[in-house]
Image (cartoon, rainbow, N blue to C red):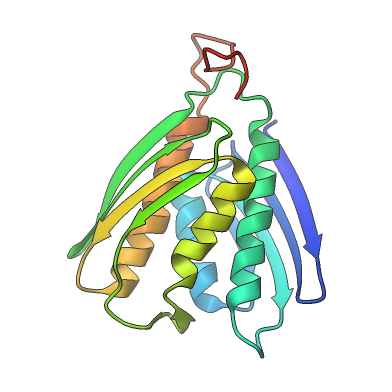
Length: 193
């Protein structure tokens, strides 16, 4: 089973995450940030991952540390669940519309961390969260999962655009971590991810 769990405890946050790559899209989320829970639910549902997230953080300061650390721990458990990557497809892409918005995502589970995020926001906050924390979440995820992730999105509504991005990342990641069936090797000319 491709399942992993991880924790991070700091003076600012306490995070616990369990991720099952071969799940059904069930999510149990308690971050203290309803909008983040909504986005993680969309990610899990459309990625068909089972995801449990328990997070407490210094929300009286702001949402930064909680969102960053959830990204860190999710990246860490994703990397553990993928393991050496034997038999996975490695690459994934998705285009997900949501009303007037469209998110296009391409990713590579090769172990190299890189984020390109081309999705300008119109306002200063989305769902009560500073919009700069959306790309920061994905940056933290990529750094700790070893993902290369390209995100491009447009649309008039910041909520729709953000939700389309989370859904598209879930769909693309589902494709990338799917087992090929025809091969049982690591999908790299180097022999390792």
